[in-house]
Length: 265
Image (cartoon, rainbow, N blue to C red; front, side, top):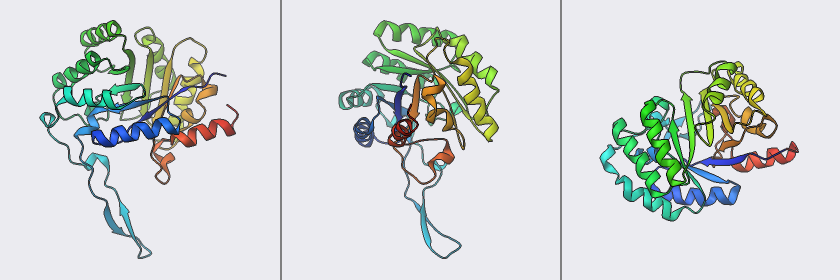
C-alpha cells in the first residue's frame, strides 16, 4: 500500500526556532513542514511552577490560548516570508490560521489574506486556504496559486466538535477538484467523535481524492496511525515529545514512522 506523505506542523514562535525545527523535522522523517505563520505572533511564556499533591514541584506550561499575542504590525510579513523561504530546505505548507479556526492571527481578515497572497507570490510550495474564506476570494487565491505552480490545501477546522462521517466525506468529495489536497480537522469530545474521522476515511478510500482527515484530543491520532490502510494522502505529525501527547490527538513524527513499521504498513 502507498505510504502517506508526512507533514510536520512546526510549533515554534520565532523564525530562528522555526528554521531549526524544520531541519530537525526533515532529519526525523518529515516529507514537508507546515509553517504556521500565525504562531509567530505568539510569545512563549516561562513555565509556571506548581506544587503537586505529593509535595513535589512541577513546571507546567500555560495553555497556548493564554500566551501573549503581538499586534499584527509587529512583523514585516514580506521580509519574514522571504527569510523562511531562504532558510527552510524542505517543501513548506504556508498557513496563516485565523482564530475562528483555532489560529492566532491578531489582525484583520484583509491583512491575513494579504499575507497569504505574499506567500503565494514568493513561490512557496503549498498554500493552505480555508473553506471559511469568502468564495470569491477563495477562487481568486486559487487562481493565482495555480498560475504560480503553488499546490493548494483546501482546509476546514471545526474547533467546536465533530460532524458525522457522512458530512466529513461529503466535504472532501465536494471540494476534491478545487485543490491538490482537501483537509478536514475537528475537535473530538469522545471516542465516538474520533471514530467519525476513521469512518469518513474508510468511506473515501479509493475514490481518487487526495485527503487528510484528523481530529484533536483523545482518539484523534487513530486516523494518523492507521493512515496507510485508510487511504489518507497526508498525515500531520509533530516534533513534540511531551508526555501523553496522544491525549491531544497528536503523534511525534518518529513515533509515527515506527508505528507504521511495527504494523507493517
